[in-house]
Each structure stands twice: as structure tokens, then as C-alpha cells.
Amino acid sequence: MEIQGEDDYFVKNTPPKNIEEVEKKTKEFLNFQIEKDRRVVLVTSGGTTVPLENQTVRFVDNFSAGTRGSASVEYFIEQGYAVIFLYRQHSLRPYSRHYSHSKNCFLDMLDIDNDNIIVNNKYNSFMKIILEKYKKAKAENLLLEIDFFTVKDYFFYLNKITKILSTIEEKAMYYLAAAVSDFFIPPERMVEHKIQSRAGGLNLSLDQVPKFLKPLVSEWAPKGLIVSFKLETDPDLLISKARQALDRYGHQIVIGNMLLTRKRVVHFITKDAERKIEMSDEELKNGMEIETKIISELKIKHDNWIEQSKN
Ligand code: 9Z3
Image 1 (tube, rainbow, N blue to C red):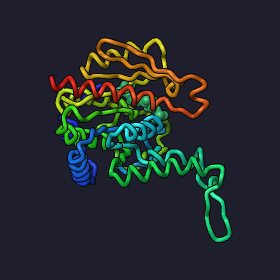
Image 2 (cartoon, rainbow, N blue to C red):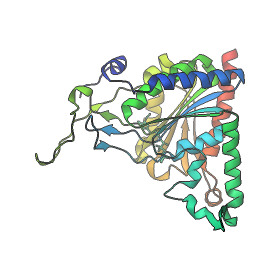
Image 3 (tube, rainbow, N blue to C red):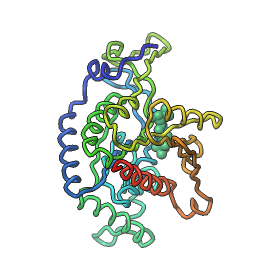
């Protein structure tokens, strides 16, 4: 399996059409936050797709709905951060996630009263709390949202945004919760048109994507606090693989989680320690989310990271 080099990747692949616009928006957003003396976190979220054709009809995808990323944004904002949210198109987004079309359809929360649309009493106070938070985030310019669809576009945006954000050095955090594909089809092997079914079955051969965490840590954002996630399905592998990632890339924190228990348990792996963060049944029943604990813990780690850099 041939692995393209990291720099090579950005030469061989075509950048997304709006990359310059994203660059401009990110710079403007960051300059605004610098004026306000705020910390900024990049939150990546959702699954990346791997198209099988240039004119894409089919693609390989993964399970992620962007729950972790979108929930985390709300808690980061509560902790005083400004957030750049790099998310998979049509995946969950902060605030609106509470009224997603599939789970809590917003239409069920509305009633018709003569000629007016009103919020059903049952949902009124909950909706008001979310709406207030959303309006505040907008009014105070605390959130910049950028969407991607393919793994290729994700890497281009990640590269661009990370390098811009790195100018605030230790005050930036990188929270990489997106479920990123490990495999892709390189441009020279990608067909233009829809793959035809006449030929019978379909054999796919995918290359490994470059490990972008390596240049991100050592070159793109060497002073920021970098938090990556490690997902496994085999419990015997989780901690060792998470520690392996930490050793290999030399960043600060890996959060390990299992597919089936990711909303209830996560493991914080750092250079000298390992800590389990868990939700009780009671907490889950009360609608509390594990992301509130994750972000509180990260805020403290970021305080220390900034403090250390002063010495
Ligand atoms: C995660 O492990 C996230 O916590 C989840 C969140 C994707 C499980 P949901 O969107 O799920 O709330 O449904 N993200 C990182 C997964 C990943 O691709 N990690 C890479 C790996 O495991 C390293 S960067 O190799």
C-alpha cells in the first residue's frame, strides 16, 4: 500500500473551490477574537466521505453523526472560548442539534394558534434556553462554522485553519473529534463517471491517507494544545492504541473511546497519566452529556498549558 507524503498530498490533490474564502473568513474571525483577548478552539466533527467517482454518485462513509463535536462546541462557548467548527455537511451542529430532523423534530414542538405559530408549552422553557445561548453566540461572534464533505476537503481545511490559528500559539486548542477516514482513492486512480454495474461485482483498492496529525503537531501548530480522539471497538486495544498515538505524534492528550460506550465513558491519556471519565446512570437520565465533563477537564489542562508556556 503506497502512502503519499504529507506535503505531496496538497500538491497532488485539488483544493476545495472555496479555500480562499475559508482562509479569509478564518483570518477575520481570528483577528476579532484577538481583539477580545479570547482563547480559540478548532473543533472538528462528523465523518469524512471517500468518493468513488469524480462526478460522485457513490462514496464510502462512516457512522459519525457529529454528536460529540457539536455538543462540545456548546460547552467550549460556555467556558469562554470562541470556536471554529469544522463539520461534515448535514451532520449535527451546535444548538440546532437539539431539534434535529430525525430525533426531536422541531415541527412536533410547534402548534398553530389561529394565524400564528407558537411553541408548545411543554417545550417552551427548554427551547428558550437553547435559543438564548444560540443568539448570544451569534451576537458575540463566538462561532465560525465551516463544512466539508470529502476527506480530501477536510484535510485542506484542517491544514489552512490550523496554520492560521497557530499564530495565537498556546492560546489555541485543537480538538479533533471528526471520524476521519484512514483510506482514500488517489486522484490518478479516480474514475470520472459513475461506475457501471455491467461488469458485475466491484473490487475497491484504497490507499492509506497520510497521518496528518504528525505535521499538525510538529509543524502546523507546534505551540497549541492538541487533543485527538482514538476510536476502537475492541476493548483490549483501546488504551494501548491511544498511548501509541500519543507517543508517535508527541501531542498533549488523546481521548480514547469505544464505539458502543462513547457517550458514557472516555479515557484521557496524557504523557504521565491515564484517567477515566464516566457518566453515572443518574447523570445520563437527567440529560447530562459527557462532553460537559470533557470540556471542563480540558479547560483546566489548557490553563496549565498557557501557564507553563510563560515559564
Ligand atoms: C472520535 O473518536 C469521536 O469521539 C467519535 C464521536 C467519532 C466516536 P459521534 O460523532 O462520535 O458523537 O457519533 N473521533 C475520532 C475518530 C478518529 O478518526 N480517530 C483517529 C483514529 O482513531 C485518529 S485521529 O485512528
